[in-house]
Length: 389
Image (cartoon, rainbow, N blue to C red; front, side, top):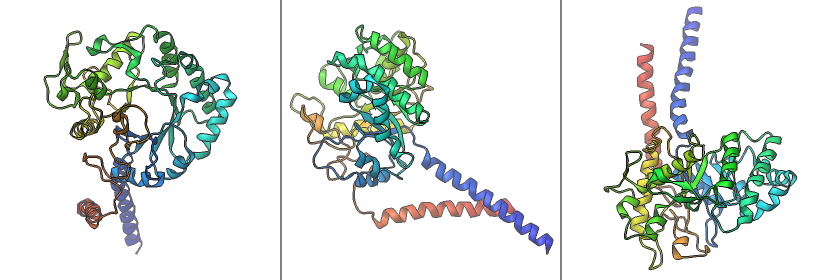
């Protein structure tokens, strides 16, 4: 009996270990946030409630989002979802945040700390596209505001889990073609270098909003549409680095790396905080069609899922946030500004790149899920038999 008891005990220990390893493999892959995120803008009066957006994102298996504020309804809705969020500290708050750390502390407590850990707030974007913009006063307060927000996080013991960053537009660059020639504008450098120094010290990457669509729209006569859309093309050749670029997206990322290198931050990672393609535009907005938007976003999604680097930084896996989750009908400006969404306001897909919209779960999809689980268990028991024989 004792021997039989020992045998069964050994069997169950090995059985537990086997299934622990099995489920680590199954769940570990799903827990990996990957390289793909989406910007969840809400300048609209007809969007689904945040609770429905959580459902939409989960169905699409999107694990990373950015919002442009710290809306409490949104943050409460995402509690327990497991989706990682970067909140935004709007440009209008920068001057106030730069004045004193106490104001930054109040903001962090009210808009970040109280929602942790249930809502996975992973970052605070301090301002958006400040440097290179028209408001010089904001250039001056960006760094002190970022430092005060970081110091507030540090005093609360949150700095290791919540990253402080600030995304930039292409307007910070003097030129970006070919990629190796890219430099920061002379008037931007005195503000950019201290900001980069601070971000380097706290381990923050360089965030850039990179839009091949905007480049093509502004110069359709000289830019190959296929090159901008990540389709097959002759691409470009950078004579200095002797590198070939098959698409503009990678060229824009490497241009940022080149600019960083020239000011002494060649080891800093580049993350694309916004990129996308408009599905509709005005007559003078070349390329803004559903077909082109689908092509770009489908190719980009495939490219990001490969988890590979760029020609200039092959070991730095590219990560990007797509702009945007929804079409936003209240955004000012040209028609394109209101038509960057992967989804329409009713939650249906704007075009098919492999996502599903806000529709009732079908029996087919449920069956598919259970079939997938069943396959794993068949494999599990087959391996289990071999394991004990």
